[in-house]
Length: 334
Image (tube, rainbow, N blue to C red):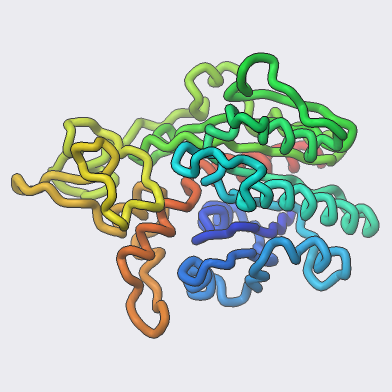
């Protein structure tokens, strides 16, 4: 088995690490600035250095202060690409971190090439809203990855839900995947981008199996679980009679969205409507129970911080699917 190392930016509570540990992949550094997710990282991975501000990482890699890993993973802030963030796009400093992600990737490749090592494989996650942002943020991002001087343009009014680009610097594939088709009872559509300059490495083979593209799910689709089975483990129901939770988000803990607004996950038990617990939120994202139940500022973790970090995270089973497909493609090149 080939050894894979990875660095993680905008790490959050590390869905990638939970997903990739069974593959034997090794995290060499994280990058997270928010206090509570940083406490979760310290609790579960005390041996991994949290570098903090991702804007400092390119220089650290160039100077040899941190390792240049074989995989770079990150979900740069999605608020500027979503309706909730009013679509600030690349003009928003959070959106600009997406371009910083490209700079980190370029520095990693430079160092790895100087050591006669194969180039890095990039894995990037975001909300599908990036495909239709008015400033063509996704075209700018693709151009940066591909090594083009001008933003790439979609063939229509917006970028499609799946595609391939081959540029002078890297090959790139993207695809919108929905967590509900990967073993969790949550409707959560996210765009995944895989890119690399490795000779012979085909990002399209990682993400795109064409017979399964039309429904946006993994070809070997597991039986879709119900919200009741995944969340409560007992007889209860999703409040509106459905079987799948709506998308968890970071405002869950603020209770700004009531069930009648059709956004707040809840269950009915013994005739009583209640909000889901942090453990149930972890299950909907594919995390182990109590993943976010850590000591925070010398006290038990508050539910609000747990909800927020869970809602901001990636779906663990989607990251597991992507990691296993990368592993297969890398091994096929040996």
